[in-house]
Image (cartoon, rainbow, N blue to C red; front, side, top):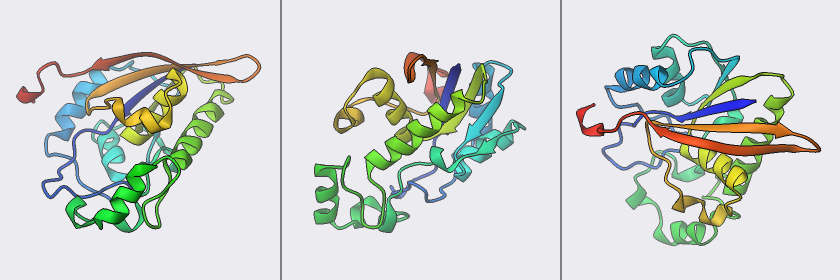
Length: 196
């Protein structure tokens, strides 16, 4: 089974707000970018799964796509930090979390290991649906989790991996004794992003 994965397009965040599950709008040109992303994807999918975040569903709705929302594809939950400016978050709390973001959570938030487990478990569960080609519309945290699993990158090193807007990631799930996620490739949709 082939899995195409895209991150939502760029968000409008001039105030540098912490947004995991906080609904923040996309940039005004998101419908043009979305159209170009879909021009670079296969025309048909057996199923499209999306994070329930508005920045993902708006992208799909702008292209009149049918999809199913899955909470497993949502971004890391930042708890009490959601919607706050990064420079307003208590520096001591932020540093404590950043020392071990895999196993520690932002106050009342989620640990990276929990995001990893839910996204990987969901990804493997899709194999049982007997689809050949599916699409995930999601966030950088989920994409990094998929890359961690497929490329055997430790989660504590996963933020060294670049996950940009306007990229298409392609994976494959093989199944013998147990499911195995394989990274196939990554494609940039826009070579010159300044003109978009």
